[in-house]
Every structure is written in structure tokens, then in C-alpha cells.
Length: 318
Image (cartoon, rainbow, N blue to C red; front, top):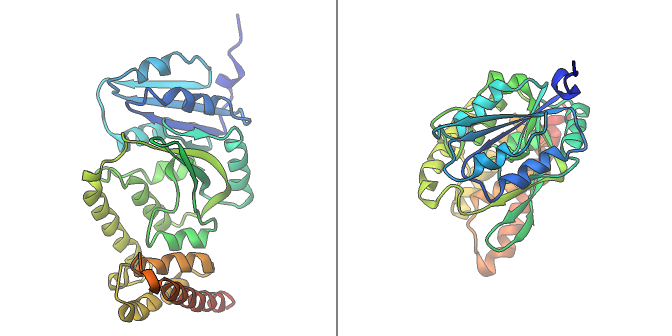
């Protein structure tokens, strides 16, 4: 009797999870970028979420024994797909990759090393952004430390979901919440931060994130922004910052008072925020396109960020 392949008998270290829906143009290269990883001890679970194109047929052509395939007859939505995949994962760690993105061949190997050497609960990576319409590539501007990522949650989603790898137990404990389509990743980072998880971002481009027309439409942006705002308020309230200080565009006389107060308080609540993160956060209090005033707004941003950074270093030393 022939013995089963080793990949089927060993418990995988990493579960790579890929939800897919109507991505026949991109799914093959996404799958191959996972199967060609330098780190081999993983299971690869793909869920076709009721695609109406040839996505399911393409998935079914791959016969690698590390793969598990789930085919749904109707679309259940991205949040449901992610949670279903998490529930199936057997690995100690979970790594996400979207079905239209690409993983660097050493992504799993390097990300696992970074995760374990820095004793993190989860981490994303730097990444390239590919604009499908014109073929242009841009480098992401990630923050890498736990303190910076926690600080950046006050203004944005500081982890790129398709680049994230983390301990399976945290994703099983804190699922993606339904009703937050388009912002489900940000809601997840807020909830994980409030559950005490330690974050990081690998300072190396380990995925290519594809931007194309099939993603969230402009019509949905108002709803997505509302979800962000509500959960930003929840996050800041939980760490002891009044919602009146939420970063938003303000006249210079108001932002000097409110913005400076916000940054100093944020640095008190989260010691170790870098100057760069403070600089980036304060920019959310300023208007864009200031013309001849741009050098002055930059000087203002630099000065306030430096004050907040020095204050944060002072707090950290005690």
C-alpha cells in the first residue's frame, strides 16, 4: 500500500488562506506564487465564493497535495469567506493572500522568521502596489514597530490584510465581524489591538498588491468611511482619548491646539512612537494643496511632531 504524501501526514506550520470571487484573470498567478514558496511546510486552503466566471475551474486544475479547495454554490461575502477559512486552518500560523495578489517566493520564510524573532502575534509586510490599469508600481509606506502601528490605527489601517501572518489562535478567538465590508480589516486590527496583540510589519516588499476595477467602488466609500469613523472612536475611547480630538482637517489656529494635544496624549498612551509616525499623523489635521504656504505647513508639522516625539521619549524613559 502506497504511503500518503508527507505533506498530508504532517501538521502544517502555516495555513495559507485565499478567498476567491470572480478573479479568473489573476487567480492562476496568485496560486502559483504560493505553491512556489521557499518554505514548504504549509497547507493552502482556497475558497471559491460562488464565482460566476471560470475562477473555480482554474482552481480545480491545480493538484498540489498541500491544497484544499472549497467551492460554494452562491456568494457569501468576503467576511464569511475569511472566517470559514480560519475555521478550517490547522497550522500554528495563518497567512492571508488575496486571489488577485502575488507573494514573493520567500514571503512565508522571511515573515515567519520576523514574526518569531520579534515575538509578535501578527505582522504584515511592506509591499508593492500594482495599478492594473496603467501597470505602474508604487512602494508602500508602512510603519514597522508595534507602537507605530498602534498609533497609526488612530488614522488608518496600518496593516495590509493580504500580507498579514499571525498566530492562528488569535484569529480563531477574534473573528472578522460581518457588516463591515470594505473595512473589515481595519475593524479587525482595532479589535486585536484592544485584545492586547503585538503587531509588526516586515521592512521588505513581500507581496504585490493589485489595484483594479473589480474592487470596492466609489459608491461604497461613504459607508466604508462611516465604519472607519465609528471604530476609530471606539479605539480612541478605549485607550482614553476623547473623540473630540480625532484627527481631521482644521484651521491652523485650531489644529495647533487640538492636534498638539492629541499627539502628546497619544504618545503618553502609546510610548515609543517614532518621529515619522507623529509627523504622518499630524498631517491629517492639515489641509492639502496649500500652495505658497506649503513650506510653513511642513515646518508646523515637523515642529509639532518633534515636540510629541520628545515627549514620548521622555515618558518612555520612566
